[in-house]
Length: 424
Image (cartoon, rainbow, N blue to C red; front, side):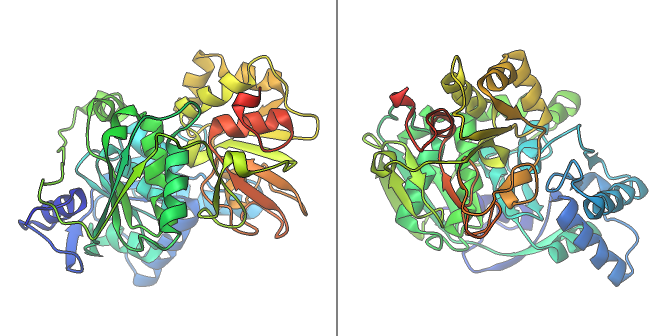
């Protein structure tokens, strides 16, 4: 019996010819990553266990991003703890604020993980890196600590769901709309502990930004990982990364076997799909944009780890160019990383945003987690390109968040209500 992409990567790391769903395996991890919050908890576990030496500091990655730049004294204390830990143990991949950005954007762009490898991270959206043909999944801080100490982690091999997309994308329809449409069908528990394998003939139409967005939001369906096959677009992002340019590491491309067995299969014809909106208070409470009528808004957030890629910023800038943010709205732009911010600067995008009346921010999780730099007040309404819209996620419990793609979010900022770029 053939293997899926996830099964092949896990089997290769476990040193066996094949694995089956439900099987428990120990595997070495190529990278164990944490942000400042999950790292602080993992450090606490290591101290509790009396472990003062990392198994391999070159396979540890630390990226402060959730409450950075430090929002208060407590956040500063946590960041300092992680920085000192990284210095003490000579952690190879420690990224200080201003040198990287949001962990899930930094990982693929810097080449911290490569195709065919396994990365675990102390954040559920670690699955983003599955877009570059790796097995990437979020785990708890205790597992991170164990991986730092031993170099290994245990997995229950996940069953795989195969999601195929056919047809031709319509204007202003992107990967965000495909995954929201999928969540409406699967719900937030429809792929629980599965590895989602994305495919179909739409694959060639999707930019890496779209694939990274879809892999990022695999977790919103309850999935363990979200994976794409490798192509020339994948090669371009992998071989232009900082690590690849310096080290030229070898990597392994992993394709599913033709006779791979899938626990769940779905095919979506997206030829008539319009932009999608996830309404409060769940990513699977999805409606077509045309079904959303006259919803005034207070804030728009564009970017973060889900839609903070350069293509996303370009899509938003195309809408903002020559226009102004509505007087009743504040619009906040968060590039996924410093590298993306620099590329955006080369294209003149920050000037477009600022002239339109937006705030062009540093790379931080910020308002996505209700942390800082855009927290919502009582009864405020926000259109966001982030990944979750649960009650209280971005601020006050009574606030409401609608999830959308970057072009729709930008158009909504200009209109002062949820609306389409086509209206402009």
